Length: 288
Image (cartoon, rainbow, N blue to C red):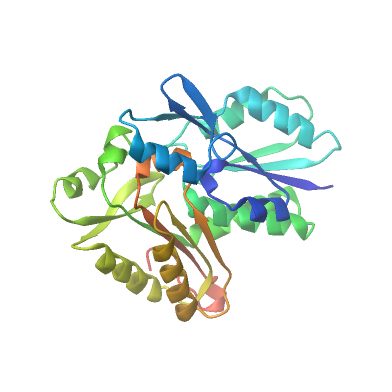
């Protein structure tokens, strides 16, 4: 029986990558006043960041309604396929709850909903692992296990130009408020226990990038990596190239942060994610 993979637009997967692995992506929504736009469908990242910096009003975001998930799950399971649906941290968005509600309204469909506890490329890496396991013909339980195993080995660090956008959206977690009060520092954050938390602060963006790369170098050997940016493709290319030097031959996915996460992260944000090799291959585990 086939396994179909579903995620949401906060995974920041390039459209061609998602299509190549038959991953269904449910868009979240960006609101400019009364105007509602589907993330990556009605508005692209390029259009969004141009508009974000041009307009005075602050956009808001919302999760997809349960009916969107219900209809998608019904369509995907019509041929008897099982579904594994992996989503952004439930502490950051109501998307996971909407997916649960959508699945609960179906009769007969086998749907497994996974709270990744992550966002952006950290979520995207888990979705890729699940899709690859599904293509290998593994069971739904094995597909979920592949995603959860990879999440346990995933490390994400994000460099912000400013915390103002996180503050406006109420997405600042433990320790981030203090960093936000310190002038002329570039905050480094991660997601821990499903929330955005402080991971450091550095005087300049270039030093922050080097600090992120230094930390990742200590996690080798690596299995895969991803880099996302909002408005600085040259920084994304630089980090990707350095990661190739740290771990030659690993797959590295580069993407642009989507509009919904962009509302909270703001322009200039740069994120990098690495997945350590399994412990039996010499990799480290989180906390070691």
